[in-house]
Length: 133
Ligand SMILES: [Zn+2]
Image (cartoon, rainbow, N blue to C red; front, side, top):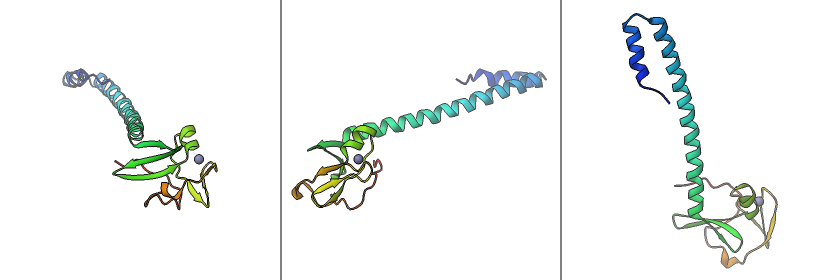
């Protein structure tokens, strides 16, 4: 934590002509500032991770054994249950004739009935969905 009293102390040291002590204290403040900046960066990354987890918790649903992402009244998926449950990855399954296949872990699943796929559920290419807000 940065102690703001140090700024006054540094100023007092400069005013009284104790330049060497002032400079030493200034270097200490610089070091603390760098440490604080690093801590802020780490905390921002943790916050982003938690926000992403909260977003998925609110918008990701498991239906009939597959994961679907619901955003802005749009359903995206299905996503590979193995990849999500083991690594947290949202990998869209590809449809291959009557099966669904994960392009990442290569797990295959019996295909779902056509009526379970709606317009917009096309699974032509696997891709990782960014966390839209
Ligand atoms: Zn997978």
